Image (cartoon, rainbow, N blue to C red; front, side):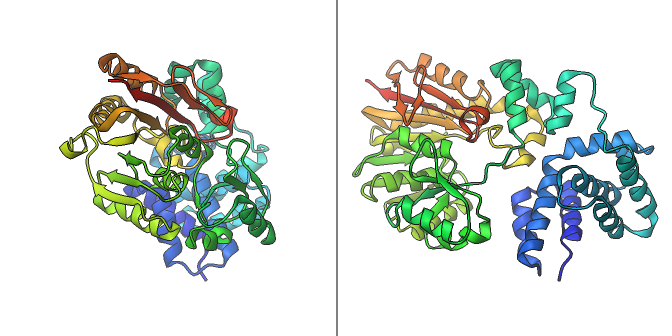
Length: 433
């Protein structure tokens, strides 16, 4: 049997060395491993936990190590991170076990160094010396870089920015969209409670089930197409679209396909959905997902959203532009995102605007255009929509009120601390001429 702590250490070293994505690394490591379910869960918790709390852990290392963190070799540094994470955030693991198991992972040359830092932290009652500056302290506490906090502050003000940051380390279990082509929500709840999982109907959408079930527990439900994972905000976006049977809909940036699937189910699998992505290899996710769910109205196409398709002009009843974005609304699920250089974010609004501008040409007169992102950044959200409406007088904003979600100027932002969802933005527009 493999050692889950050693696996976590190896994955952390690999991620730092080659900048691999955490979800890809987890899938790759688990596919090669010989682990019991509990050990697989421990590996995942350790690797994802350290990744999520990286800035916090490195701040502690800097406070307790006489050697500057940049001079600590990569294996020892990640071992210390692993030990500190267990000491700070895993109450069920005794301190002595967290230390001894971590030190055991290290080569002889670094055992003493790693042991000294971990035991020094314990002797000091696990005290974390936070910076005096408020936002640097919040950065350490939440492991969100100050540059990302600045984006939240610029968009929503200091009070909301702090609440977004503090909510970004909360995980509320899994949200499952029920495939009502196959099962009812009540049937899914009965299955989940039958295997000992806690579950409840989402407060906004009756076809979303919130559960604490593990991935292993819901695997059969997913494999048989009875459910798929979809956050409430994403589901409500498809409700705002209000798809009807027989319509022709374009999902311009579709992968991995969740919104296309929800739309198809809302349409009772009647009509046509064209699901596009810039990368051909990703479209297999949509094709395989649709097959698993018993959906046959989805067609996939490799297509750059900025490049025109002349035969699509004026031909769709609904066009969804769920554009590539900075992803700052989903950092609780994808912690790697928050560590990316913010400079890359500055170029996104122009790309998003170009996709929206191009895809607007595919909307029939009287039909609707929907713009959405999974980020919390007004420059990628409201500013893009307003710029589009100012330049395209043939479109007007459309107010919506869906399951208690009420728009302002045809736009709505989902906040984790308010809605208990991902951070998400959606805007609805209508072509009037």
